[in-house]
Image (tube, rainbow, N blue to C red; front, side, top):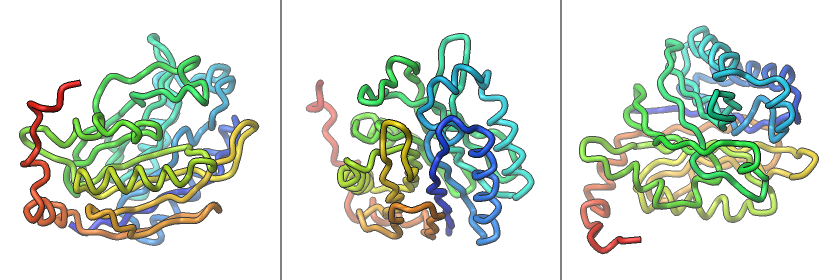
Amino acid sequence: MLVKTALVQMNVAFGNIEENYAKAEQAVQEAVEQRADVVVLPELWPTGYDFDAMKEAPDREASQAVTFLSELARYHRVNIIGGSVPKMTDHGLYNTMLVFNRHGAFVKEYSKAHLFRLMEEEKHLTEGNEGGMFKMEHGFAAGFICYDIRFPEWIRTHMVHPEYKPDVFYVTAEWPKARISQWRALLIARAIENQCFVVACNRTGSDPNTAFGGHSLVINPLGEILAEAEEEDTILYAEFETEETAEIRRNIPVLDDRRPDLYRL
């Protein structure tokens, strides 16, 4: 199936929830005007890494974000990978990706499994313990958040299900500018080793502590870059056929040649 993705590479206003919601709404509308099938937002787009804002105005069970994204998806008839949002629960504060189909129906939530100590996530956030697999109209997909991509064993876990394998990895991030070369290298590696499309949306701009690098990417299962943004605010578009993964996996059956009996940690 041909899929047109739109990656919203935006400068997240630090702690300014109202401004960020307005930016996201405008970007989704613009992407739909360009006939996007899937719109992807960056990590923590409502607040950025303003932990005080997350706690002072907590979005209990992410209800505000859920309502907002669901209504946007339904109104514009577009699938939304809702970046990630702060989700306050009785068990803690999570960094959670929300996914909705073009009817506005909730598809999946995934909470970031690996917390990044250099940005003090472990002091404020709670680790997620569930996988990122979900199904959309273009087939199976999986979602990951930023630091997750440094853990190839976690990504590979989503490829070894006996019944289904994702054709697309959706990655949402606030990846620092200082390590943007690693962002590109890691994403290309994850695409090649899993023979999967990678749609990776990073933010741009800066907050009081960190400058972010942009360079959102869409990569095919051979590791070839189909589209890449620079550092400025933009919406990055790319089209691809999800059926290509099946042909590539037939030609180079990497997953069939695994020897998990040797892979003991």
